[in-house]
Image (cartoon, rainbow, N blue to C red; front, side, top):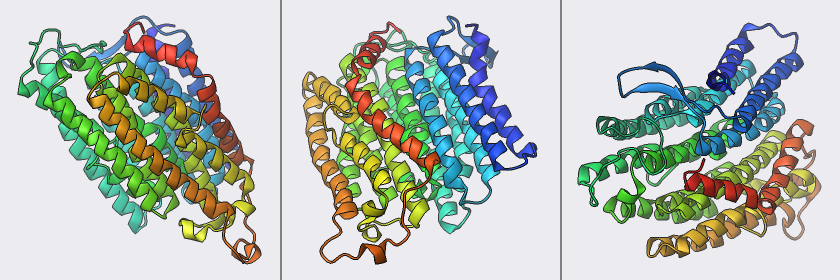
Length: 490
């Protein structure tokens, strides 16, 4: 395809978002058809670009000889692009039924569709400057979604999200300016773009990378910069599902991979204090997130803390600085997105049908919402790592990579093992509350009128529950593709 087609996944959502409030739809049905059609069209364009990738980059303008705004789709960008393209239409369908109980729906869907284009821009960025610009615009387009309710909790969550994001942007900007001043980051190249560095890089180099890691790590919810993520659970569930599974948090992971593997040199970072410090933060985050998930009774917050932990699984793979580690990171990144977005969808379905948020209010709810509970069970078992699910394949690849990377990899395996036990506990405790409410429990009194949601919510639940296992069953072609990316062949 011609490189000019790279603009379409960004422009189509932007135009559609502008038309949603402008067009006078006769009713919600026509509006929803327009929104879903726009999202599906964008997904189709992304898939066509993946199948027929343009060979050249599209440079829209240049700020200087070294700094430009350019788009290109390489192997790593393809992984992120396919992830968002596959999950955005399902989230949109889910949102139609969920948001029918909310207010200001057109405003919500306008920002929702616009964010699709911005996140696609992150996947299609050809260099660090372009990625950084889209990354920061994403903060602005997701902020109204976090604050959609505009009550006290939503405004507090929005302020917190913005404060953390601005701090992270400042750190990432330091890494960006340093890289560009040294000739790095002009075009993403596996193995780094600085070109010439001594065997022992100086502390300025290491500090610049570490600040970039912390800056982008804010979106990836690295400890201690994770606080915005549980607070953002007050947003409507379609938003929290995308925030916690795909758009924002995976964009943070994606940016760290770009910074580490495609700008700074992995060989120059290996064995330095910067690698050890970043790896230590990831290990702390894994155990902390899983522990907090077990201790939290709020269902969406439990899944939020689970996400904090699982994201650092991916970072463990990235920070091993080995091709096998990167393969493990990409494998778990895709699998986690499918599993976790469905868990949030299940929590949202319960909230939508019952207005219940805390587990102690959900005793026996599985008897009234069997389809929702089954979807949660299937995706929850996958998250626990039961073979041959998506969770198992991601952990297996990470464990294999860690075993070959002493001593950091062995420390990472220990953290994964601790987290695995905690994951089983916080997932199975949900099931026990849902289907084993206790002796003399009066279901009719406690759950009168409780039932599963409609098809617009159940269809995504079923597809994603099935996907969380098909991803593991047919993981070999994807793992081979990820290996080609790690070897610089794509």
